[in-house]
Length: 259
Image (cartoon, rainbow, N blue to C red; front, top):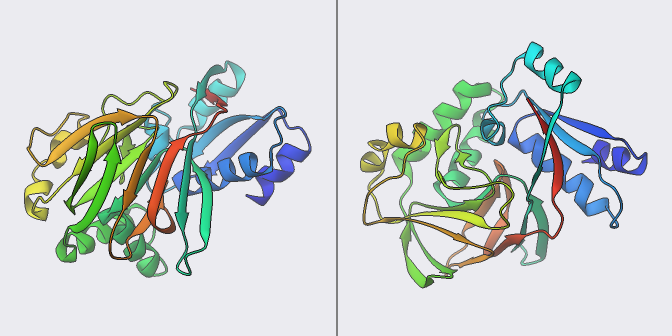
């Protein structure tokens, strides 16, 4: 975040985020929390992290030749940025931005497990071990959700909403997401047994929707989540805070360079 703010203050033309979704999350917050309506640098990604889910939207790979080609022959687009308002453990308000997906549910437990085990097993292997441990012990939590379809309440394995299609290390939870249409694509997975959900992994990794009565897809300019019990929130693979949570779309788009 510090380096992104420096790039903003020094009027850099291009800023490359070297890391994964968490690094990109910090870069975006460094840019937008420090901006005052002026010009922002064009943003690019060097996908060096564990998940690299946002990079999947643009098929950006850890390929030095392709990255060099992108810098020499750039293609540009604009991407939306999500806004989020939630609370810390002391009920103080938190306001941040996110670039890919914000989530309530099992993903927050995966992140906790990954951070706990990171010094022993890092990288992609550590991430997959965290997923396995979380799936063994997690139970759906009761959450109330408000979207344009109305109010819904019940046990949720995961509720995710965002700009991109992918999260969780390559699971496509929003096949119809578009990164610049001004709407959040959301995915509500209700009271499904963990092992049944695992049976849909192939469809998720293949970018296909799940056909199940407990799985609902939608699009909205904003969504709201709350719960009677403390439920954590993550965004772009980073632990952020606790419900209640309001998600929306920032008024500014970011210029983005890709291969």
